[in-house]
Image (cartoon, rainbow, N blue to C red; front, side):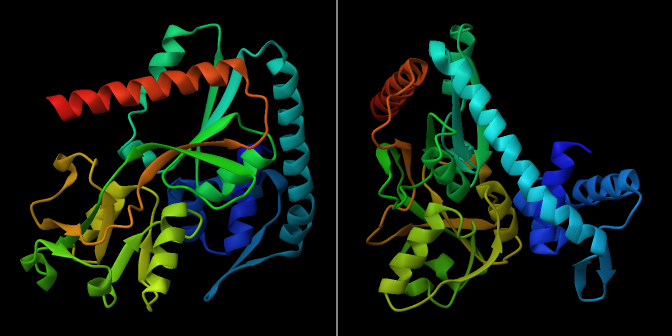
Length: 302
């Protein structure tokens, strides 16, 4: 049994839906289904019962679920202990990035650093904000780059890139006749957004709630590009950062400015409060900040 297969099983067992589990695992539904089938073949039992209304765990599935969480927790503790041991010399570091941030944050900055610093062992994780913040609190990461600030009092958030908010609508939407809209104008629209595990969505729900309505969020995904592809078929509207490359937008879409913009998309560096920073992590942070400042200066003066 491979660890990845066990992870896939646990996500499916939680969701009891291959489509939702695949989205959370950031793989295709076909690949996830294949992973589960291989695991079932190896164990020689069925882990899930396929019912008309969805999935249900078999008695064997319940056994694996009971022990699976223990196994993953033990492995996580093992990885953490090994990493802490390796980090005695301060050469190794682990960071995380919010899935979707790669649409507006130049990841080349990080990998250029790695290329220029072969003595530093860098590992990266792409995940949602909830998982990232929990890992920071549990000392499993040196720092992270997130798409929006969270609210945990155990973490420190430092603004890095400030994006204005664009509203993307299909040209058949009556709103496309306008140049700008307010959030109140969008209360009857279908939103295409990330899940509540992302700080951007948490902020959207909070701001809209203060305005007296709950946004109707339909399709959910981490990446802006996937959401924009749904918008091209007029499935709903998308809020996105203005730094996203304009070539991403289809001719069937129009971008509007958001009035009284709450600035949902402010990329932050986040780390746990009160920690003694790994020297390699400090060096990488300084490199990221310098590069972002340099690129922003070039953008404004070009």
